[in-house]
Image 1 (cartoon, rainbow, N blue to C red):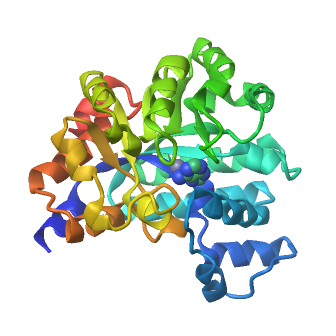
Image 2 (cartoon, rainbow, N blue to C red):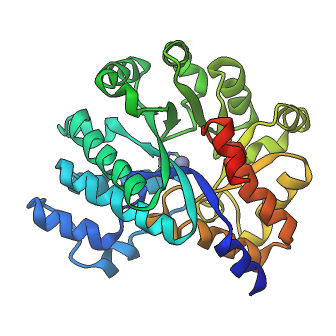
Length: 326
Ligand code: ADE
Ligand code: ZN
């Protein structure tokens, strides 16, 4: 359609993308063979069939299993390069990429192995096709805050390559406040701060992310809509929400794309953006997320332009570089 062609052609930034969640079944099988990993799946079809989730934890169990095939620096390079090339095809000009160091160090893969492969690919994308990127290291919230501190220490030699920290994994039972000390330290170090909040967790978790973690962005934030005062505050503070429609569908945060609140978010004055989260697991990259919305929700051309503009406004690019993209 007209709107789909319009989306496809618009420059955009992606602000919520877990690099490990861009691991496609084809590459997963290739790396399992390359690394002689004992692996439960024999084919791409078998892997895809396993991707049926009724909540976040169902997905996380499979996501952590999938990352077992990532062993060497080359594996992380191949993973990252595949995402950057795919994002480029969607006219993503700037990507702020999450990685989960503890998902690797817990398996005996050193922090440096993971980040060096990722950083090499980011440099190549800048050189080869001018894509800019930022790297955001996430702490796994189901683990103790002490482990997050240890991970922050491991990042020390790599701080020139790390723009910020995030908070992901199992949300319920692990409120943002659990990580307030390590977020305070990261803020002192000059790092940007983001956290998943209000995906499955209640509005209180969004308040905690704002008040106790002092985040620069909220990842997801869907459940903020249950609290009118919170919505007013997010709008007044021009807080960016990195919303992930196909993820919300696959993890049953929404029943159907037609009831996805993206349009309502815009109408309420929230700075919402569209992102793919874990595209290999949730059925599509960033343009696929827009296409699904266009088919099911009455987004206008203005809405689409606003969403893409928001992605640059909400990015951690320097102001001058944001303006150049708008
Ligand atoms: N890790 C990867 N994707 C995630 C998501 N959508 N929520 C929480 N943790 C995640
Ligand atoms: Zn996420």
